Image (tube, rainbow, N blue to C red):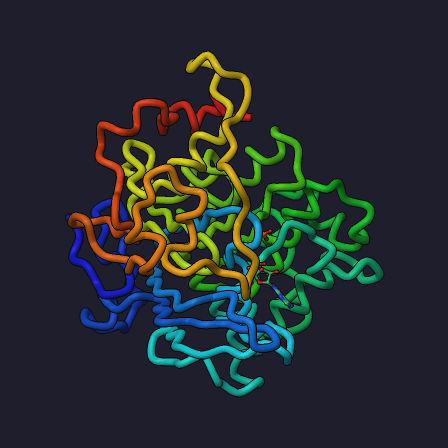
Length: 364
Ligand SMILES: Nc1ncnc2c1ncn2[C@@H]1O[C@H](COP(=O)(O)OP(=O)(O)OP(=O)(O)O)[C@@H](O)[C@H]1O
């Protein structure tokens, strides 16, 4: 059972609440990160319309949705990484720190320190002309204050932790001397250098082949168990999300439209958009080898329809949906849905099940 907060879910039974030494009991119950009413506009056009999301200490949360829904912008805004033309409002709390409007110095110390981010492309984090181990050692120096031999030893330890064989010798190799999967591991080692409380993994396995993808997912799962860090896993791949995350948030056109524990989402998606994402996955056991795409496309920012942004693509939409934006409301103890006509449990017969997803049986 969970006690609910306004912007998310707290105290999930499956989540190990990790309280650092010295932290008071009350503090441990605060979310690690609490995003409230986060809005982002580029050149006056709003692309994020008031996102509410809380991440608990130690939990893994999936953020899914079609391309352009605002998954990356949410976290880039939180970390102060959007270009100058972006205007950002709302609140992002990391413990007692407010990140929106925080000074550049403060944000720089938080990025790579308490919150680290990894991306699909390791070259966004690794400099091709600096030896790989040195880059990790520099991150250790910057965020943990170690120097010289101590920083080098810690970098080697992190390289070993992420599964780089013969790490002492390979410390001096350049990024191009490692495989794509190993570069992804090095990027994770860099992210771990600051001992983060939260790792934002933005499509970290999308560019990798299936075997390496599985290895990187296993690595993230074991690192999380070892360190107690929370993970936000941004992905199009519901199968990968189901392996790593206890909870999933579904985004559509700059809003969160459904939040719930992973198992419940797979058992019974309530938002027609979530259901559409499941139906868009080919299933061998359902006798269809082709995906069933959601009709239409995500509305462009600045051209949002009145009412629910998904209504023009939704088979369940009523007149109300075309005229009024549905708020994100709790539909039971551990789930919230932004829909005037949420699907009932019986309406989900053709969804894939969690076990199939995790085994990759029915997934493209
Ligand atoms: N620098 C920018 N300038 C203008 N618009 C931007 C910028 N960055 C993002 N956007 C717009 O913000 C919206 C949300 O983009 P975002 O990258 O967050 O989507 P996403 O859900 O992460 O997509 P993907 O899965 O393809 O990465 C999109 O409409 C995108 O075009």
